[in-house]
Image 1 (cartoon, one colour):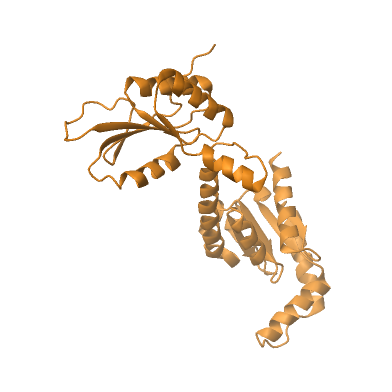
Image 2 (spheres, helix red, strand yellow; image 1 turned 90 degrees about the vertical axis):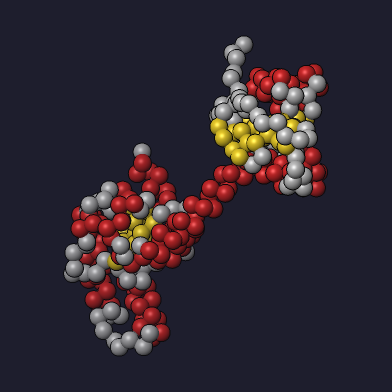
Length: 300
C-alpha cells in the first residue's frame, strides 16, 4: 500500500496566538500552568476549525497552548499518521472532516491509539441532515470556495462599473468578456449580470461612423461579443430614453438612421470576427447565457 506523508500542505503552528509554518514546535519556554497541544485536522484548510478553537480559547486567557493545523487530510493513511503524531506529542485532536468515512476512521484510530479527539463538524452535519431530510455533499473546502466566489463577484462588479461605456480602455485587456454595441443594446445590464456571477466584463459603445478604439481591436476577438437588435425595437427603446431625458428628436430615434447604424455595426463585427448576439427578444439572463455558451465554444 502506498504511504502518504502528512499533511499534504505544511501545517501551521501557533503558540499563544503566533502562527508559523512547520510540524516541529521546537523548544518552548516554561510557563506556569499546563501547556496543551491542540491539533486542528481538516480535509480542507483547517481555518474553520482553528477559528472555532480560538473563539473558545479566549475564555482561557492564561492558558499556555500550542495549535498545529493539518489541512488536506483526505485518506485513511493520512488520518493514521496524524493521529500517530498526536499520540507522540500527547496532543488533543479537533477535526472538521466532512467525509463520514474519514470521521469514522478518525474515531477508530483515536480509540486504537488512545488519543483524545473532538468532532466539530459531524454532529452539526448529522443534525442538519435530519432536519433537512437530505444527505450532505461531503465535499471538502466548499465554504472556502463560496467565500472566494463572493470576493470575486465583488471585484467583478467593481470592474464592470469602472469599465462601463468605454471607460479605462487602457485596462480592457484584463476583461474576460467585452461587450460592444450601439446605444441601448443592453450592454450595461448584461455586463452587471455577468459581473454578479464573477465574470470580469467591460463594455464599449459602437458609434458609427467613428472607428472602434485601437485598444478594442488589439484584444483576442474571441473575448468580444457584439450586441445587435432589430431596428424597430432599437428605435422604440431610444424613443423611450429620449422622452425620459427630454431629448429633442434627431437621428438618434430616426428609423432609417438606426438601420444604417445597425448595418455598420454588423459589418464591424464580421470584419473583426466578433461573436454576434441578437438581444431583440431576449432577457438579460438569456443574452448572458448565450454569451457564456459562445465563449465556451470558442475555447475549443
